[in-house]
Image 1: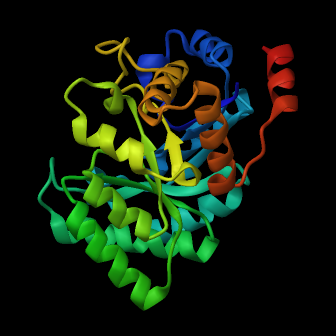
Image 2: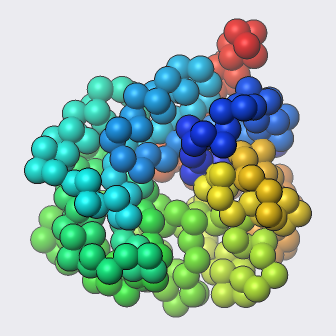
Length: 271
């Protein structure tokens, strides 16, 4: 069984003490690919260094909606340049809208639209963070689609209702579920996980946040994506292996990478 964790933040300092052991555990759990998200371009060099260390790591570049105060007129060109500089960049983001923790609505929308344009120019998917903003997100995307054409991507760490889920499926997006889907009170998210077509489904940890049951309350890590896979498989009444096959194939399709069996062997021998 091969799994892909489509959203990690293993550059965070909570992993500094045992990052190699974390790597050993994700390999032991069958995680063969990871997509490292980027919250601001200043992270790029550090994430790139991790990809040098762990060949199964691909990554994105972009600016998180809660960091839009760092946006400058030059940052769009910077993101564009960085994305072109390394073939391991497979997405733009994470970007999007977060109206739960911030109220700078217009600034977030403008910065998000700028990054959508970059993704479209480079023909890369966009990793979308959307919290308490599903309706304005849909409106912004529809407006962008009408003016500029569509952009492909993923609604990451999805927490929306089934109705909201359908909005973004209709726009062509993949939907990615995190450890939240394993939580007891996540009834609507569980419903959404049951309705997403098998060819649009992804799984992630968003580590170090949101560790799934039975690891809830601990630091999250990529190996725990197996619990997300197990939960979603049970909800959909399929085997964990079938769920892994669907989500891994979908990740390869969206992000444009292959399963790196040879890179796994290279990394094991070089560790």
